Amino acid sequence: MSISQTSSQDILARLAQVVHERRSADPEKSYVARLLFKGEDAILKKIGEEATETVMAAKDGEPQKIINETADLWFHCLVMLELYGLQPSQVLDELARREGLSGLDEKAARKAKERE
Image 1 (spheres, one colour):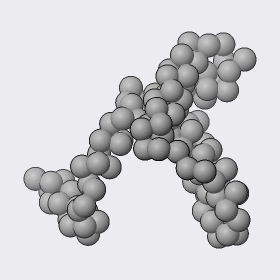
Image 2 (cartoon, rainbow, N blue to C red):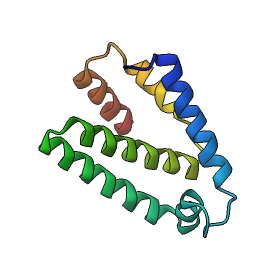
Image 3 (cartoon, rainbow, N blue to C red):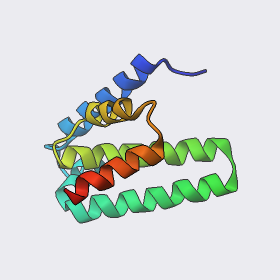
Image 4 (cartoon, rainbow, N blue to C red):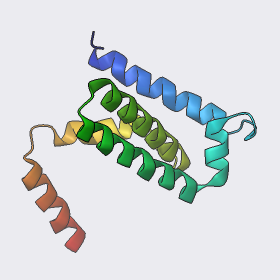
């Protein structure tokens, strides 16, 4: 069973809203509040851990494990976006902008822009 693109975006928006609301919660009672309270280093470390676990799951080749670890990674990325005042819709907009572009061309364009 798959989810439509619209409802997938809705899920990300709803999760981002929950993360935003939990920002002001008690860090003793909310995992998200605790991460945000600990700050950038703790959040980025957690993303690194989840990325590694996602890679390990992929190497194991177990579909449900890959799904679970990717969900953990995406969730922690939502926490990072909240830390920086960003929204998942901004990431989705960037992906939409890149749609149909060659990955090599897009990367070359970014490098050229960085040199300016």
